[in-house]
Image (cartoon, rainbow, N blue to C red):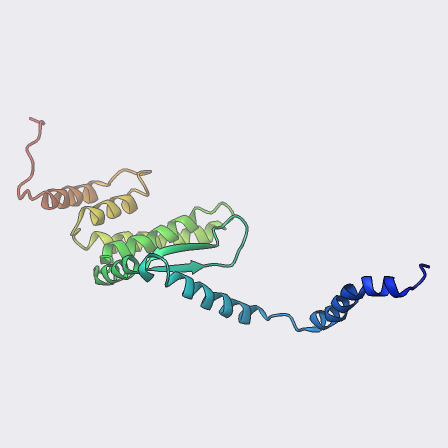
Length: 185
């Protein structure tokens, strides 16, 4: 052990004083996650007020894997976009039924599903197809959705009756009233 002298004591005084402070810092309670999040949010808000005339906003997500954990957005652009989306009409009845048909059809295609359940789901799909056929398409999107559902994404051809109805709808969407001339003589 080293001999304690007046000189060694004076040289080590700053370290002794610092050591006296360390236990107090170690005893301090750690900042709770939500308190820390609110403090950091206030700091970020104050900083954003100084950026681009205060027009920016931040979206912050929990850091998980490779996902981006934050992004900056022009607040006016976001507000304008939300207003525009709120003003857009909801999807047509045909598109609503098509989305429902799509989910059921994808479920019916699951390889592990028992045959009885597949048959039941496909019956529900056929009922949705029947309901979609009963409504005239009001847009090319409606027409395409109906065609995709009736043919199971093109796996099957149109039956004669459905084909005639589809051609009539196609002519109506194209603004044609009469049947188109044919090459069959």
